[in-house]
Image (cartoon, rainbow, N blue to C red; front, top):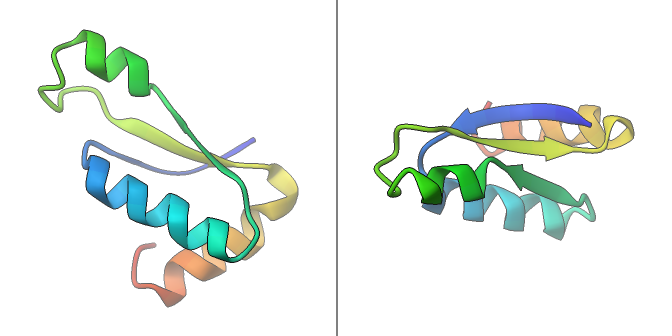
Length: 68
C-alpha cells in the first residue's frame, strides 16, 4: 500500500475516494476509527491509501484534479 495524502477533512477524503473509484482505483482510508474515538475533533489525520501498483496512476489523477 502507498499513502497518497493525510488530511483531517472528511469531505475532501470522500471526494478523492470517489475520484479514484471513477478511474477504477480502489482507495482505502486508514485511521478513520481512531479519529472518531478522539471525538472527531480533527486532531488525527486520516490517510488515503492505494495499492502500490496503482500509485503512479492515482498520483497523476490527483495532480490533474489539483489535489497533489
